[in-house]
Image 1 (tube, one colour):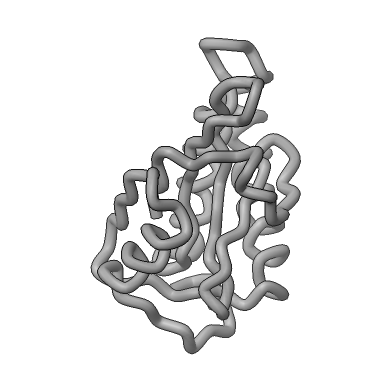
Image 2 (spheres, helix red, strand yellow):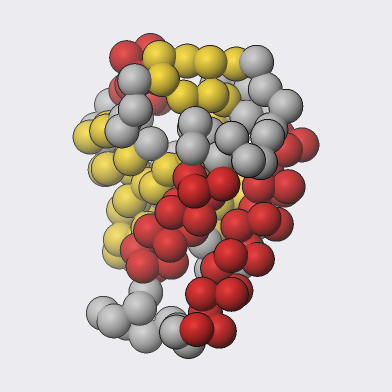
Length: 143
């Protein structure tokens, strides 16, 4: 790994899927690799900063701005996940598609911290947070 995160928390995809299934029983969960490394919260901002540089560079080459049904939330989320996974290939970082109560659907990014806690990241502003799941109901999680 070129960009090393401090990390000693490896989790198998089977275990990760079981844990997420308990938290989000209605969601379909897909883990792309046989194991992932949970990341320390203080390392998340470092990973975001590196990926922001890559995404900004790509945006100079091919400018993109939010445009519904052309370049919108899932496009931002795919781009963000790709940048993070390029830099940190074993980082438990992914995408989550949610139904927002009384609003509609949205795509976000997500990660699991060193304690296995699930966090959301808004890919359009790089802010990470936890949400009351009564407002956001995940229906697809890709790690």
